[in-house]
Image 1 (cartoon, helix red, strand yellow):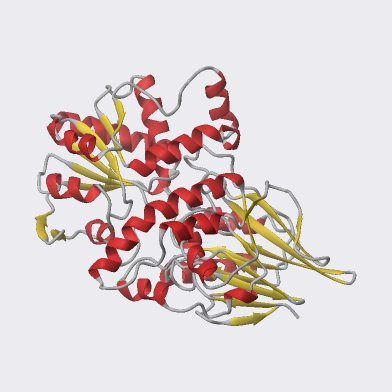
Image 2: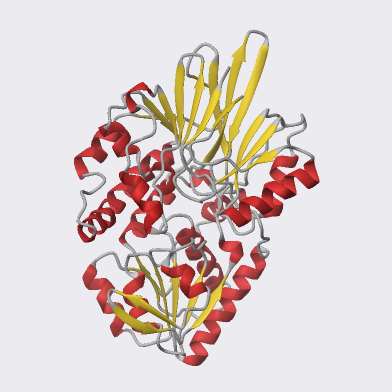
Length: 454
């Protein structure tokens, strides 16, 4: 009898970590950081609720920190098996952990705690990775295998189907990881499968619908035109991966089609610069439309007015550029990074605009701004919020409720049970109810530490 343990991503978005026990094997699916309020982040310092030395394999769905962030601690605690991931995920994992190491070290210093991991531990971790392509069958044992499928979330992201063979009987468990939205993506679309016995499905946007992709471009166009008219500065807090590249691609489209003038656009994030170079390396992961543009000679990540500012000196020089201007900087939830310095400088001016294009988790500064805070505190300074606050839901790299239900609906054979994970309680509950109502399938929101027999 196989067992499934839920050690993260339960009624919260972050900390994804699931342990599958089958035969004599222990397989971990993702090993992510807990992010958000301090009570969540404290969990990162707790010992693993299992013995890392007993884990045979780790399967990674994608390279966001809430799915990979505790891997260095796993190795430090004695894990010695293989870590399976797609080639882009492996490259991104190194970049993401190197970048987060600085942020985590700073948080530890303020909390008078030990950093979660150090540079040498990241290098040690990378030795355990094994690259796996989409649709490549990997045998963990004679009776356990898995395959990656395109999740359309970020470059190299995958959902995973694990097959357990028991004599003539087969049992399949699908872990969604994070599923992508097709509304604005430059990636190939989310794949669908037609068979699964058990499914773990994410629910970050389980209670809402995104705008159409065309609306996203219209909102950006209108917001930039408004910013130009007001002589203001447009700030866009963005994650360094996928969201930033998607924004650059759409701005490139708007400038080349003369829908907006070539105002200065600053990509003020060293990590975004590095990640964009990896995107340029793996263009075969892009959708057909984008690949056709590249074949015709269009450099989709360059256009007049665009400037990457990786150094501190270049970042500071943005202040000397007169508006109108656009600044895209991390972090996407305003929890750190250079966006904080721009928000300190520009949020108090009503001519300026803050455009949110990412999910804003509970307990983050971005969430407080999004919910209408009139005053915020950044680096011990009180900042009045007078700038316009706008948001675009369709830029989310997560599927909305309709996208999630459509994906589940492609499974022809009735699913025995669906576990709704990786979402706050409200969207997770809404998605679970929608699954019960529309599909007539049992849907459960597991609790932290829960064990289920499959």
